[in-house]
Amino acid sequence: MTFNVHQHNSTFCPSSHPPNPSTSTTSSRLCKSVEAFTSRGSSWNVRQIRSLSLCIGVFRLTAGSSFIPTPAEIAKNKAIINIRNHNDNKCFQYSILAQLYLSTSNSNRSTVYTKFLPELDMTRIETPAALASIPKVESQNRTISVNVLVYEKKDLIPIYTSKFCNQRPTT
Image (cartoon, rainbow, N blue to C red; front, top):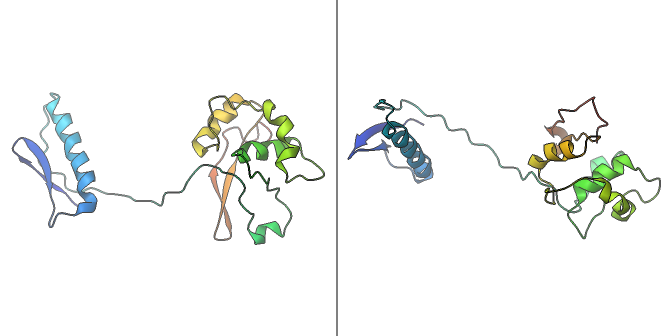
């Protein structure tokens, strides 16, 4: 995408041929930023922006929730405990507690781990826990490190790797 920016009535505006509604918000914000920068006494004059690269990615919700069934191809290996929590959004906490206090029976029931919930410091961390809150969880719980993987198209993809890897037990 290329914008030719020109000065018109003391404001900068992009000339696109023809105007594209999907870029109008972005170009408006760009023009306002250029105008704000030049009006603060920078002594710079912007005559032209020769090109602008716009990278668009897929938004992936990065927060946990309540129970989500395990895909069949993973469940058949019997290597994962999927905690069944239908009445709250504490899946993240139950997953950590299942690692710390592995139960030999009914390990997929949240009631097995409820008594251990007070051992986790979740102060000022909303549930369901967002991916962005994991560093705070780790800093408030000094013995815990967390790695998060997503299962997509029969592949496990790491989306969060603890900076405390190999320094703390990994959950």
